[in-house]
Image (cartoon, rainbow, N blue to C red; front, top):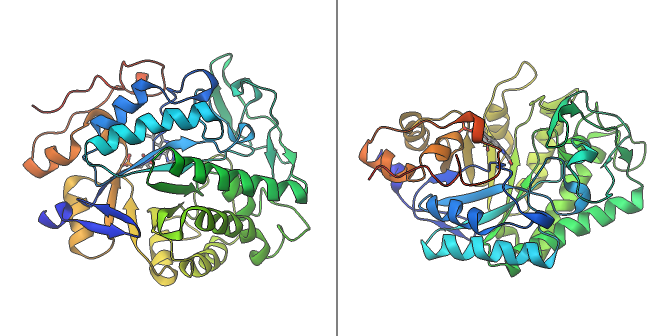
Length: 353
Ligand SMILES: Cc1cc2nc3c(=O)[nH]c(=O)nc-3n(C[C@H](O)[C@H](O)[C@H](O)COP(=O)(O)O)c2cc1C
């Protein structure tokens, strides 16, 4: 177990232990998609993690898919994140902003403004999404981005990374999983483009590479992480050959000097994504998915990863690190209040003491 609590460096991030808080959308943003004092308190409570990855944050109004998710493109949003950064730093924690552009995984009903829903191609995801207005609804059909607009989206990511640093956050993580925009470019069932962003493997990975380069150029590659789950079919996403697509992406992104790869480890019929990462990724690795204290310690002891991340266990256990270290029993959490507004089921979970 001891190694789990030993320090580690991931790029510019100095983690005091190898336990990472996995990004979790909690839908508590305020008006204007501004992070609130409540969110700052939530992250402060969990700041003993070696690294906190925030919930997914839209880099632009068009990037918003779900209800009450925060942004990082307006001045008030940046000020909101400043409170979060200060709260985590006051506890000697490290915190990065997860940049999540939902692309086609969106409902118009979740947008406060008239921003559009955009994607590589005008193909609707055959899935449902929750809205405050009408409950569960069909995802809307997106509009295909023009080539010149793709450059604009890359610049929005870049600006969001600059805003993250301006707010005092330590860096960013690019969300490239769960069927959102980068994955929509990577995958053959959502990308039918015939220009340089579609078709060949090289073309389908271009958008993700351009975003990573924009982020790295803006704030330093050693402050940028990448989150992947090759093979995942969430939100109706499917790639004909994830081994080839992600093999090339991993090879190319390995050369950038990113802070880390954050892998949601899973084995699918088309790909065992941990095997793929072992073959193609050269850099620091955070492993996620359904870990317990015991299996996490095994991952670190075996040298399978530099750090591990926990999602759901952090919901009901703000002091997860201390509980694991002391072998204290872990608390569960209320599934009904995961995405509801307010402190209930959010900041009212107590520590073991
Ligand atoms: C409520 C909830 C919200 C989530 N939101 C995000 C998100 O915004 N970004 C992301 O990359 N993953 C998100 N995930 C996935 C988690 O980061 C994590 O990969 C998953 O929960 C598996 O880890 P666990 O078994 O430790 O919970 C979410 C998971 C949960 C339970």
